Length: 347
Picture 1 (cartoon, rainbow, N blue to C red):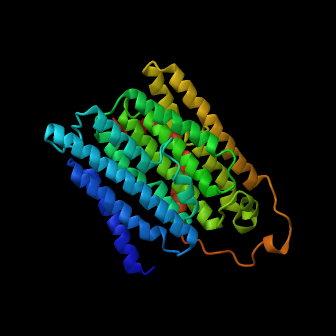
Picture 2 (tube, helix red, strand yellow):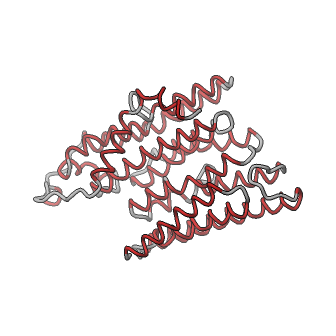
C-alpha cells in the first residue's frame, strides 16, 4: 500500500472517531461510525490473502448490521419524541437496541462471535488498531446514552468476562487469545459504566497501553502462535524476558499496572453493595490469568528443539518500533504506585 493511500485511510479513521466523539446528533454519530468502518476495511484487506479478505467481509457485515440497528433505534426514538440528541434517548426500547448494537460493534458477549475470527485473519498491526482504536467511538456513545435497564448491562458485562476467560483457555493462536482478552476487558469496563464512568475511561486507557505493548512485542518477534513463543529467546532475549510482565499485567496480577483497574472496579462494586457481582468478576479474572500464565510459561520456561531452523539468526533484525515499545512496556509495568495521582485526573 502506498504511503499516500495509507495516510488517507488513517486520517479518515481518525476523523470518523473524532466526529463520533464530538457529535450530539444521532446522524452525525452514525456517520462517524460508518467512516470508521469504511476506512479500516482497506487496511484489513491490504495483504490480499484469502484469510484477510474473509476477515474483512465478516467485519463489514457485522458492523453494517450494528450500524443499521443504531439508525433504526435513533429513527424510532425521533419518530416518538421529535429529537435526535444522543443523550436524550427517552424510549427504553430504543436505548436497549442502541446498547445491543454498540455491544455488537465492540464485540461484547454474547455478540462476540465475529471478533476472534476477524483478528485471526489480520496482520498484527491491523489487529492492534482493531483492538484499541476501534473501541473508542462505540464506547464514547455508550457513555453518552442514558443507560437501559441495569440488568442488561450487568448481563453483557458478566457474559463478556466469563466468555473471555473460558474462550481463551484452549487457544493456540495468540491473536485469538488477545481477542478473548479484549472481550474480558470490555466486560470489566462495562460492569462499572453505570456507577462510575470515569473508571471505565481509566480501564480503557490502561487496556490500550497493555494491549499495544503486547502486540508490539509480538510484531518485533514475528510470533503469532503459542508454539512459536519458545523460539523467541534466540531472536531477542530482552524482549522475551519482558513479555511475561506484559501478559501478567493484562491478567491483573499485582504489583503490575493491570491490577489497578480491577482493584478499583471491585472496590466500586463493593461500595455499591454488589458483593455477588464483585465475586463473580474476581473469579472470572482467574480464568484469564490461567491462559496468561500459559503464555508466560511457553515463552520463558520452554526451549525449542535445537534444529537448524530454530537456531539463533546470524543477524538480528533492526527494531523500528523501539520508542513506542519502550514507552508502552514501561507504563504497563510501573503505573500501579501512581494510582492516587492517576485517580486525581479522573474525577
